[in-house]
Length: 96
Image 1 (cartoon, rainbow, N blue to C red):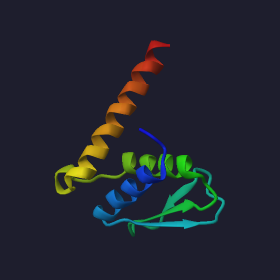
Image 2 (cartoon, helix red, strand yellow):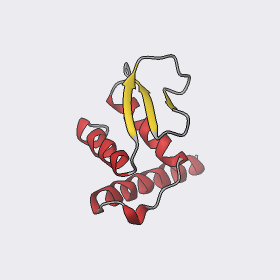
Image 3 (tube, rainbow, N blue to C red):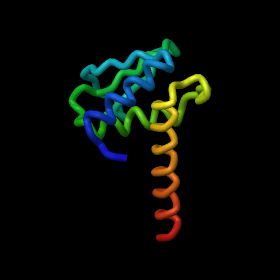
Image 4 (cartoon, rainbow, N blue to C red):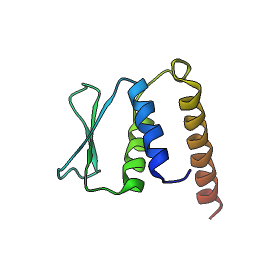
């Protein structure tokens, strides 16, 4: 997966479909993001570059429950690409 502004926009659209609001705010969160009181608001450190923002959104995505069937085809394709990339990374780490 490429860490580009286009990928970030696709992830933001995916979160929109999941009814999450993404806010880029300054703060001193240890992991770079926080979920606000189960209100479907993700707050990400605004000083992060594009790659860090994408990684935060992917980390959040891996920790929330959602129905992939309810998403658009583009969002499902993005999730599938991310899962394949993650599996390839896991396999590479195991080989080492």
